[in-house]
Image 1 (cartoon, rainbow, N blue to C red):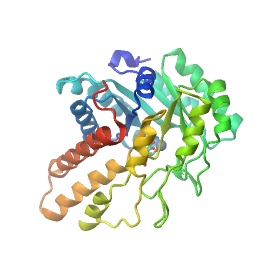
Image 2 (cartoon, rainbow, N blue to C red):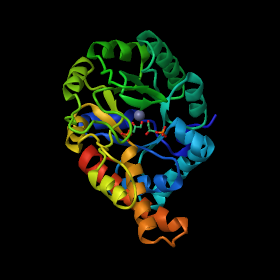
Image 3 (cartoon, rainbow, N blue to C red):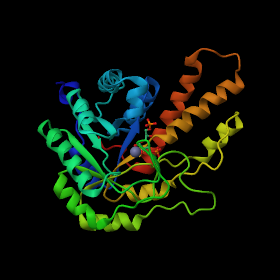
Amino acid sequence: MVKYSDLGLVNSRALFQKAVKGGYAIPAFNFNNMEQMQSIIQACVETKSPVILQVSSGARKYANQTLLRYMAQGAVEYAKELGQNIPIVLHLDHGDSLELCKSCIDYGFSSVMIDGSHLEYNANVDLTASVVEYAHKHDITVEGELGVLAGVEDDVSAEEHTYTQPEEVEDFVKKTGVDSLAISIGTSHGAFKFKPGQDPKIRLDILEEIEKRIPGFAIVLHGSSSVPQELVKAINQYGGKLSDAIGIPEDQLRLASKSAVCKINIDSDGRLAMTAAIRKVFAESPAEFDPRKYLGPARDALRELYKHKIIHVLGSNDKI
Ligand code: G3H
Ligand code: 13P
Ligand code: ZN
């Protein structure tokens, strides 16, 4: 058993309490490789922001859980080398079983998500409660989910959103003992969140209703990339083919982060930033074949994107 605190990591409890009171959200950025991890840490050090490093099942398959955990451990030292001791959470994104959550907890993760949102309500409660029981023994924080996001989530695809029902949240939180709750209010994973012509709006009214039922409780938004159109344009300009990629407008996320939303998940925007930067190098320097010459610019673009999110969307700058 590896204890996360021995690795210099923290759980999310105190971070969320401060964030809810302070009217900002902690960034939860996914990482799968060294360049992503470096740019996340550089951005958070430069803006003095706490951070949640997220590992998805896809990331575990792609990069190996052991390597990712050591990278997170390295991130703690890396931040100090860059001059700032920032709070870093290592979080399992979309855990789908008690076994997976246990294996991450035993391996040094400080926070896990158990996503039982596709299950029937009571089955979701039971599964989530079983993870909380194990996690809390080790002082690890747990995120649950109620409501289903449209699009692909955990290899399950849903055509339509099933919005979180505010009448269920109080009971769910009480019965499971979760530390935070992911809700479905119109965000979705990936770069195609709305159809052209559709009003790109999330249901802040449902968020408000949920807050009334569980005041001060930590709320999480998944699927919160904004799909910056300048990145889509750059990708297409340099040979890509992305049409009708639309995200959540940043001003709506800013409003959400001023409320009880204290963790905002962003992955796709980072993918777009990296892809645009790499395509530019390939298009402008076709003879280049040193990966550092295209991964380096991709890393720089990613760092700037994350800084922008922290300062202008989440408001978590200067909150360490
Ligand atoms: O939840 C979705 C995240 O963007 C992770 O995606 O499963 O492709 O790593 P992934
Ligand atoms: P995006 O695809 O909108 O970046 O969402 C990422 C996410 O929710 C990871 O869990
Ligand atoms: Zn997600």
